[in-house]
Image 1 (cartoon, rainbow, N blue to C red):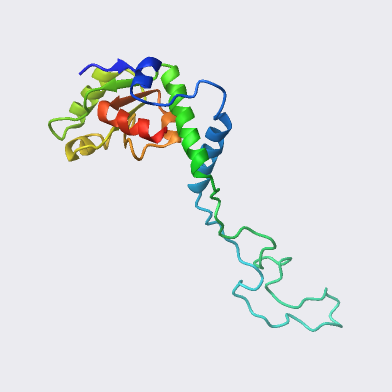
Image 2 (cartoon, helix red, strand yellow):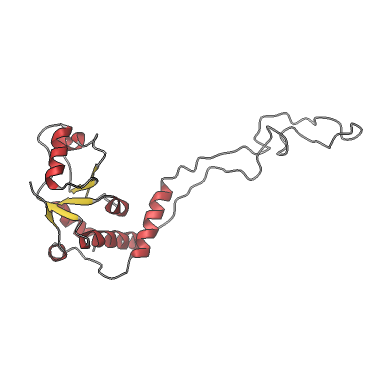
Length: 202
């Protein structure tokens, strides 16, 4: 099961629209930033003076004690009081248009093909649920430390065999994204997956 480097000529034969100019660099940046922002939980939360569970009674009378005026125990200037302008749950996600997402995907794929980092293979799969078999299959395709394996689909044996292999990631051609295309040292693509990737660049 030997893998071949996908050349620009072969990519064009597969009807993949390559970007050979500088166009699309900003789109890649925008999409990757948006994807990372969407993963932020935004769950940081602090209590205001209205939300702190303390008595609303006036601590002492207004005048005559010699102490500073105080109206409530939940005052932000007091220990245990509320927080002024503290973080509240928020959504960090950014909107990116479909056109920009497609351009970013096309640019990322083009750059990896131009660099000779995309390899093609007939099919990906193992005959038994065994991590060792999966690792052996990957090593036959490439010696890279981090590998992205793209196929049109994966059977249960392959999915289970790959679960414990941190250096390899499985992705279907319909779901693989721009960030994944950039994150791995080598990309191994099956013939059927190549057709689906070509459709996504048009």
